[in-house]
Image (cartoon, rainbow over all chains, first blue to last red; front, side, top):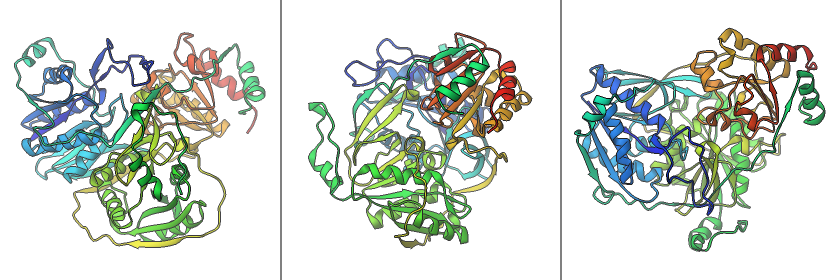
Length: 251
Length: 347
């Protein structure tokens, strides 16, 4: 069975972002970029499934401008067998990404697709669900545990939901989106980083995949959230209780 | 006629008048609803409340699915739970006992194809997040998720980068416009109202099932629900153990509060996952948020920055949490919490 994993290049999670003065977006020039943490977890899970002998190949897929190749190479260094780069400039909204994914699925015919539950830049939490909808495959979102049963061609997924942990059983082929506690991703070792340079990467354009990427969404502006009034330090529990009672009126 | 509030928009991004008027022409909204124990759940009321902002003359239908008498009771409750609701649609089938995404998305698609709403709204909790994007793909439209502000039928504001930026987005596609809203941004109104509602029923005959529900593991608790509690007491990794976390619970009990936790505390196994507050956990906006032993990482702050009053207690005076707290106390939580328990007034 082949597993396809989506990996996205985003601003590193530890960076303090800045909104551009012209409000057209967030500053990404000269800012550290990394693989989306949820995508790292997705790739790690795919690698573990392959290492358990339940899959034959892990294909990492990225979509975006030329520089996205860096993220793909990181994925190959972690252990993916092959890479696919759909090169597209301009904003790619989740629906376009999902349609491009569907086109790739028709070529690659994987038995399982794993994506991160959300990208930490746009925080959409949509793409995995949309890929599943377009393909008519079952979905196991916000996965904190994945157990594949090759015999029964099923996968059991524990999902982190508002009320606790929900377990669902999905027929393969299926789409899974990963939550934070699914696994701890491996670091790419130096020998693997070197090996990754010669792993094959196939390039596509949206035109070649017959997908129109023009969106039904437009970003009007990007602004900073309202700033909170500066707080004060109190020096004792008594002072804290007094302020909460008599100044803030919350107790 | 819908009223669209005028906004200052840069010249090059002026709206295309035709698509604006085609949505503004007649607004009708389908709210994807949830119910439990024979009543409509609070988040659904937030979604109905949010629908008001899409425009005047918006007729709201609530879609409920499930089976049996609890579904019928919930439909009755829906009829009187919000003045904006003019219709309740009920889908009765055992496909919906456990609210799986696959039959739900298909149901939304069917209802939309028959009724032709201009908007479909749900709340961005784990149910809405699971279902709405799948339904959007079936309807071939881009959804706008996690909306915190609505300024008309097709312009919305949503947080990005863990809430460190706000993105104003315009929907330029055809009907329906699908959106999920943050319940903390659209608090539900209190009180019942007159029943003025029609019911309609759907039968689902589609029987291909590729997924099945197995079980739900959840903790029994008497604490109020984290999502809409007025006071939240959160503990971080500094609590050091699940046993110590009981101090947080004791304080929460004294304050009639819900208990929250940071990702680190959940990862360490002190508390279950559904207590996690943060960018990828629950978003809360209580009147009072007390954070003990919480460093204040970007991802945690994302989940509580809209709280009215934030209190932080941490041994480290450089902890980022103090930048966002209204009242900060540099001290040892193992001393502060017992002192608070002793000195706080009885509820």
